[in-house]
Image 1 (cartoon, rainbow, N blue to C red):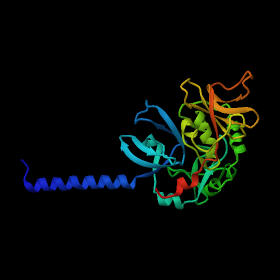
Image 2 (image 1 turned 60 degrees about the horizontal axis):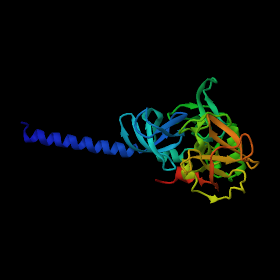
Image 3 (image 1 turned 90 degrees about the horizontal axis):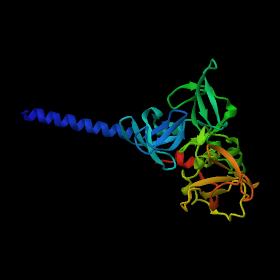
Image 4 (image 1 turned 180 degrees about the vertical axis):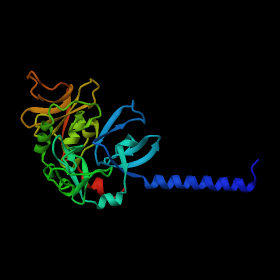
Amino acid sequence: MTDPISRMKNFFLTLVAVIAATLNLAAADFGLVAIPVACLRGEPANSAELVSQAVMGTPLRLLDKDGEWWSVETPDGYHGYMTESSLAEADRDSWLKAPRMVITALPATVMVDERGSVLSPLPAGAIVEVSHGMIRLPDGRLGIVDPAAMMSLEEWGSQTFSPRKVVETARALMGTPYLWGGMSPWAVDCSGLVRVAYWLQGRILPRDASQQASVGDEVPLDALSAGDLLFLDRSGSGRVNHVAICDGHGRVIHAGSGRVRDNALDSGAKDVISGVRLSARRTSGTPALPLLTEPK
């Protein structure tokens, strides 16, 4: 049996450890995606469903840690699990004060060192910092990026929304592979394609097609314009499970059947888009900049 002094000592050591762990968790509640594209899974396991993705520099709320997995929240409130190696803990105040740039080149550009050797690919939509005339990645690496491939975060966030640019971005991604949960210029699902097209204009939409179907204004199915979102049921469930972007010329662009493609709206066309058309919406999305920079 331990003596009272030893028991008291052990108690205080345990208390100190608990307090330290709590303070560490509180200090590490902000992070950035540190790799070109990070996977967000439904459970803390590599075998779990891929529910979404986030590109480099996306700010994250770090909610809880389970082994090598962090439970995180993205700027739009989406939750999932990300591996520790995919992110970098950061100081939110320092990040907010730093000059930042958004990659706009589609589908991506590269960061090189002073010798011209590639350090990292940077997908469109990635957020990077400017430090002493160079670009700093979330993991601290410094390099050079073509100025024409990016714009300041402030300019990105203050763009005038253009439905035509949504169509142009979607068309620029034609042939991109389909990936369930994909949300980057390298692989997308149907709602992920919409998200990428809006994100590059500094706008955010909900992650899933069923959620996107509730934003903006409803549009009659016989009065579709460029940039309108068409929602379909392709499973026979009677519910929204697919979304396509109208191009304003009788066709839609969407991610399905293996890749980003376009199909006709005319029901008599050979390549008409399949599925039951449930609704259409017209929206400019939510400005992303306040979601990235306002206090949580």
